[in-house]
Structures are given as C-alpha cells and as structure tokens.
Length: 118
Length: 115
Image (tube, rainbow over all chains, first blue to last red):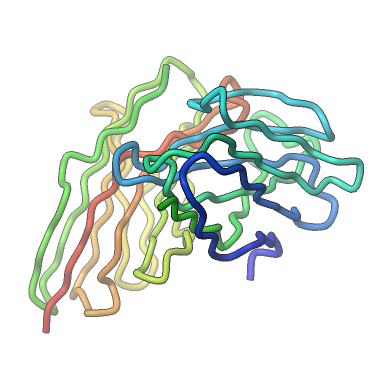
C-alpha cells in the first residue's frame, strides 16, 4: 500500500458528462501529480500541484482541470467527456523536503481510477 | 525535452528463459533519474528501481538486473529465469528537476511468459 488513495476505483459515464476524480496524497506530501494511461497515448503526465498551486502542465486537455485543496487532497475534473477519455487515471504524491542535488524524493502512485466513457 | 523509447512493444518467452527489456532515453539535463515500473494485469504501477544519472553502477536484485549506460543513453532491464508471474507491462521512465519531477514514461513493453 503506497498510502495514496484514489476514489472512485471505477467510473462509468456517458459522452458529454462531467466527472470528478479524487486523490488523497500520503500524509505530509505536498506534491500531487496526475497521469493518464490510455491505449492511444500511453502513460502521460497531465498536471502537477504543489501545496495548492499549479506547478506544471503536461498534455492536459482544456476540458480537464484540477485543483488541490488546503487539506492537500486533489481533484481532477473532466468535462464534456468523449469516448477517447476512457483511460486509467493515476495520481502520485511526492515528498517535498529538501532533497539536495544527489538525492531524490520518491513519487508514490495510487491504485488509479478506471474511467469508461460510453 | 525528455523522451523515453521502448522499442519492444511485446515480448513472448517461455518460462525459465532470460529476457531483456530495452530502454533508450533522451535528455539535456545533467542530473536525471531513471525508473522501471511494472504494471500487472490488475493495473497498479509497481516501482522496481530508480537509478540516478551520476551512478552508473549496475544493479542486481534477485532475478532482476539493470544495465545503465550513459554512453548509449540506455537503461536496460533483464529478467533471468523468467516466471509466469513476470507477465506484465513494464515501463521505463525519466525525470529531472527541470521537469518538476514529473515522470516521462516510455510506451511500455508487454511481457508474456508462458509455461
């Protein structure tokens, strides 16, 4: 168990709908990363939040948005869903202490949310 | 920009064979980190190893071994005496501080080990 939780585990919805995926990071981790794993695009980085602020964007569609709340949990909002949005969505959390130049703070992945758009 | 290439899409071996999964990467960063993850049919991502760019020592862990060569920008993964339980998709990934430590994954190699 990585300590990162994601809900729901499975989500089935219809095209055009809007869904929210939730991620609770490990206790004390300030960074949350979202990734999408789809058949077409593989496993790709979507967005990174640190202590409530957006830090970096990857290949995230404009229909998608995310936020991180004061309690550090994060939500990924997907709107106007299309068939191609069907994917496994992972979040990962990471320690944010001073790692130094020759050390690295590990990223811990949640179990993922499997989204099916019909 | 960083890039990870796993040229082998699918590999099929018979149990007890050795198998090597290739990973080639591109980065302009001088300090970076390489990873291998395993994704079994259940879907979770299982961390296998991290290698720092300044440490080119190869590593062995049981039946698993990793060969990191900066000269060829490769980080290959070998499973010795493969077992059916090794059947999974394996991902190579790369990150650095310049990418905010977001992981750049290769497309993955699907390994099927048959009895």
